[in-house]
Image (tube, rainbow, N blue to C red; front, side, top):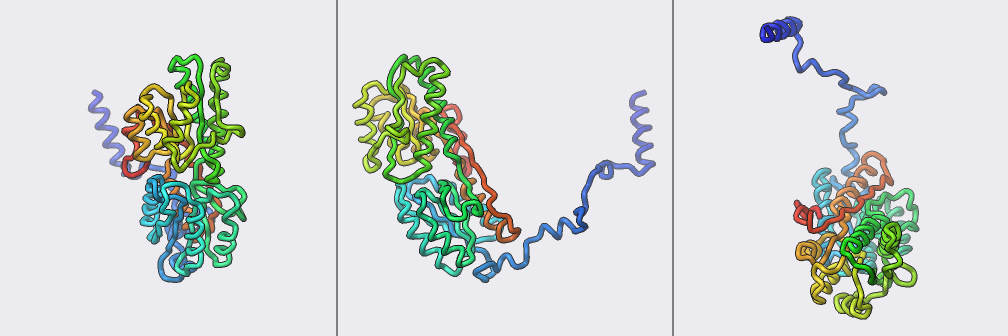
Length: 360
């Protein structure tokens, strides 16, 4: 009976010429303004001859440290975006493994004079140091996008897009560190946040402050704050630590306190050394150690138990989106569309999933 009924319904639908292909509704074929979507989606015929007028777009991305691996996925992301829009991407940056904004500025001053450049992407870790570059780029008609580190004071900030992780994301690591200390059963001890303000990276300073505040808040809510000493230096931007000899500096700091139960480092300069320091002191699996970034040293440290967790910035996006933003600015007139890449907390439970297709 049921089979007969289904057959009858199918036959009736076929007799009316109804099929799945025509069962869809709500299709939009053209804009309310009357133009065709397919035509409107095409690239402007003048885009490829923007500024350099050489038939293709060329963007330069300049970072303040290309020597430690953090920006590798940034460069990959920029290359992927360039391939998608048919643009040439120049991958540039300081060769130093530690923050070197002076060298990056030197490169930028050269790039901004290059007549083949159609757009510039730059990191801005040294607050107040980039206004002359912005002026020169504007005078030459070259659009700029900033990525990774954020300079709130940069000339015409509201008209320049920024892609990066807001420093407040470090609170995720601070909260995780405090919870780790509580879960460890420790009843007292020091939680240290070593760093170096000498490098002039305001973003790192803000991370330390955000992590410090989160640690204090989490311990207070658990009724444990009085049992621990949380130390991020006199201004809560980090205990001054030598960035030129970070492993020994960290070991000396920890041993001088004698009761360290947790530590947080806010960048790639100190997190790999934290991994080595924990191993050197024989504290593997015994110290709540959290850091920043997800390069090979961090991933190996987490897997081995010398680093409890680390915060990633999803740096692939920090290369991919600025390229797309410059393209949209040139082709569509879209500017200052910021992107917060947020934070990715990686621990031993999920470290094996990090780094797939160079997206760490």
